[in-house]
Amino acid sequence: MNLNMLSSRHLIGKHYTLTDYNKDGVTTTSPTHHEDHCYYHGHIEDVEDSSVSLSLCSGMRGFLRVEEKVFLIEPLEVTGIEEEGLVAVYRQEHLRRKRSSCSSGNDTVYDHGPSGLFQHSSLVYRPLGIRVMLVGLELWSYRDQIIVRDSPDDTLTSFLQWRQDNLLRRTAHDNAQLVTAVDFVGTTVGLATSSAMCTPKSGGVNQDHSAHPLGVASTIAHEMGHNLGMAHDDASLCSCSTRASARSCVMAESIGRLYPSMFSSCSVEQLSRFLEDVNPSCLLDTPLVDRIYGGPHCGNAFLEPGEECDCGTVEECSNPCCNASTCRLNMGAQCAQGDCCHNCQLRQVGAVCRPSTGDCDLTEHCSGLSPACPPDAHTLNGQPCDNGEGYCYNGQCPSHRQHCKRLWGPGKTNKRQHTHTHTPRY
Image (cartoon, rainbow, N blue to C red; front, side):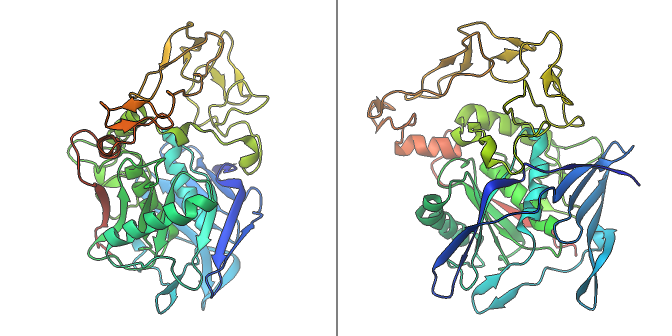
């Protein structure tokens, strides 16, 4: 078996930090230096419907997927000690135990590679044009910073309040996910707030319910999907491939025998609607080159100095305007991406590229000279909006009614959250 692999350079932010707490609750935050080219993704050669995700940071860990068959890979242990160079490969359905955790009283310590969790989550989102980059990790070493209960609702409420009061003030980030070994009540393994990306409520809580990191990584991807406006898949209407059932899709309501790796057509449509209706500003903020670990690199889907375009790897690229191997425009193309680029040509001056999203937002138009839409502009702060019920602030109308409408959709007045359940089949 031959594997075609590429380095996942975009996975970890260059200024990624690790924060832990001493027994007195004092934080220590320090930058970490990860081994370069440590995470890889790709596919099995000559197998069309396949994917591979591997970490070589400390032994070999990851998975191989061939259609609906998933094989897990991890270092081979003999009497509890990892044997250098030896790995175990086994079918996913043979994984039958919950991950153990080290705990003392209410303290919980986690010890499986966090970056490995986000490796899988990042790969799941790549086909949607969304990159998940890890910018920081918090380890609650001696005691939890919130009361982690077996009620996922209570834990989510506490975690999001802690994020707003503490984490957002210390670390710039778009989304936060809590991973806990506390066994949530019933079959629920995750909970998140719907359509909350780029707001103080952007986050979720996830139970570490599997002996392999792929389990909780799938749950993180699912809960982040709720933050991005995706609902649970309707098994009668949604599928993520011609071979897979809705149960194999990321946004299936419960996890079955297989951990999902693809989003359904329903999820893709819901994401598109969320991006258009809500226009979440943090997702439009492409990271600067110096924030991406590994620096500029053709094939990472970020347009960087010296590139005319970047549509991802050769296997991923479906852009007819861009040469994925060189990151140069194809002959006759004026552009390859951007809201002011259509069929590889610049849109005419004055064409609307970003319509107004409300009373406080202005419409943007193409310049005719650039494929990029001008920066999002808004009315002056303090202008009345929503029929006098609120006042404009940074392009938003923070009235109570508009806040509910933005988060939960038209006609909704109560808080809506989504749970993720795990069907106990092992």
